[in-house]
Amino acid sequence: MNEPIPVSRAVDGGTAKLLPDLDRPRAWLLTVDGAPQSYVDLDDPGHLEFEYTRRIAHVLDAAAEPGAPLDVLHLGGGALTLPRYLAATRPGSRQVVIEADRGLLELVAEHLPLPSGAGVTVRPEDARTALEAAPEGSADVIVADVFGGSRVPAHLTSVEYVRAAARALRPGGWYAANLADGAPFAFLRSQLATYRTAFAHLALIAEPSVLRGRRFGNAVLVASQSEPPVAVLARRAAADAFPARVEYGEALERFMGGAAPVRDEDATPSPEPPDGAFSVG
Image 1: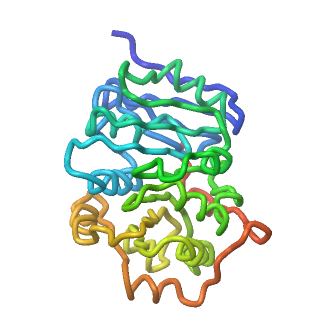
Image 2: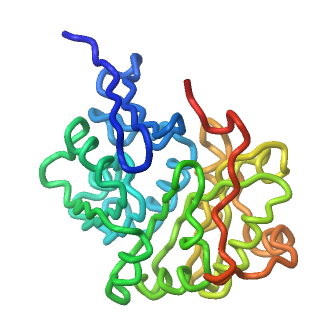
C-alpha cells in the first residue's frame, strides 16, 4: 500500500495542508498557515485528537439521551471532525455546517469526503449571516469553532451575535464555543459578560493551567437557558488525557469579575496567540 502523502493548497484563508498521521492509517491533520484546524480519522470518527474538540463532544454527548438524534448547527467547518463524530454517535441527526472558506471546503470534500448518508449539509457562508438567517428555535445545539487564522473574528463576539444564537436555539438547547485566551483574560471575561446578556446559565471548560493564567490556551464556553449537567461534564473532562475543569456558578462569577458586555461597534477579534502556542511544524 502506498504511504499517504501531504497535500498543500492555497485556500481563501491562506495555505491549507493535510498532513497524514503515520500512526493511524487514514487519519489527517489539517492546518492553515501552520495553525492546526482539525484532526480527522476517517476509519474512527470517534477518535478526537484535539482536547478542546473532546470537550465540545462531552457537551454533545450530554445534550440528549445516548444515541438520540440532534439538530445541530455548526459554525465553522474545518475538516468536519465533530459532524463526523455526531453522525457516528447519533445516527439520524440533522446537521448544517457553515464554513466561509470555499477553498477549504473543496479540499476537504476531495480528500476527506463525508460518508454517504451522514445527514450533514455543508454551506459556504459567513457564520453570523447564516446564524441570523436560521429559523427561530431550530437547533438543539449550536457549535461555534470559527477562527480567522488563529483568532475569533470580531463580528462573532458581540451582544448582537449572542442574541442571534439564543434565538436560533430551542428551549433547553445548548451553545458551545471554542475560544482562546491567556492572562489577564480580558477577552474571555468580556465574552462571559456578553453571553450573560442572552443566556441564563454559563459554564467554562478548560485546563487548570489555562484558567490559572500559566499559559495561553483553549476554553470551551457553554451557554443555555437551563442548568447544564455540570457534574457530568466535570466528570468527563476530568477523565481526559489532559484533564480539564468546569467552572460554573460563583467560581465563574469571580472569574468574570467586572467585565462588561461587548457590542458590535466595540467588538475586536480574540487575541493573537503567542508564538508557538498552536503552531505545528
